[in-house]
Image 1 (cartoon, rainbow, N blue to C red):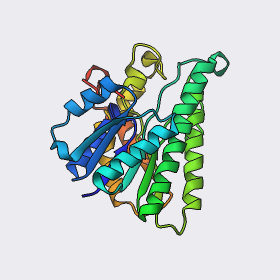
Image 2 (image 1 turned 180 degrees about the horizontal axis):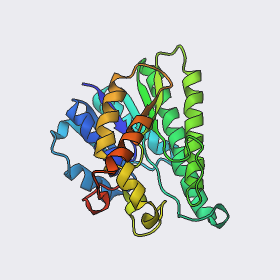
Image 3 (image 1 turned 90 degrees about the vertical axis):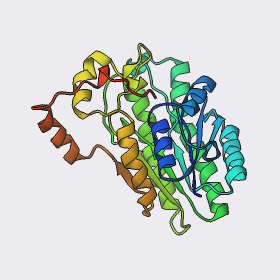
Length: 265
């Protein structure tokens, strides 16, 4: 049976991807840095416990990521997919107001954590002879700029760049690396009381037009990851066609995602 490891999977998009991989018959290793959130995630899963593993992992620590690989590989004998999904928000403030601690946390988690996870997974997969790595990107990865989002955006732009670089260097190895762009999701990033990347009151309307709860892009992108055999591919949920359709649909059908029991990230 194939195995997937997902960092940052105790809530939101990561958790929903894990559930969908279980639906597809995979062994799934969930991980996160918060023990309570991780325990809550595992309790929400109804699958056979033999198909599920969970481990605490702080992606800022490369040794934690290496241990995650080693333990799961020993448990199930293979890791077919590794998804670097762990990420944190920034405070909605201008760059010159960002504290040293906030800069350090965002860059170490979103950028270095993803880089370390990619290194660990690629080295392990080169030894086993196969595997796919996917890195989750978000706002900023395409160069978009918005006040209050630019520290986060800087980290995601860098993730997109080094993933392309990894893809180039992996040519001829048989391994696949790519990026996941799930689009606009209603999670803690927009729904938190404070420390949120966005100002909820400012973005609520656009999210009700273009946004989704995380299970929607998760189901779509899990299938795409399983089927994809092209190195360096960007897998996107919210395509330009979907954007146009959503704006047209909004003229006739109104949604209110913020009053829905949204999964949190």
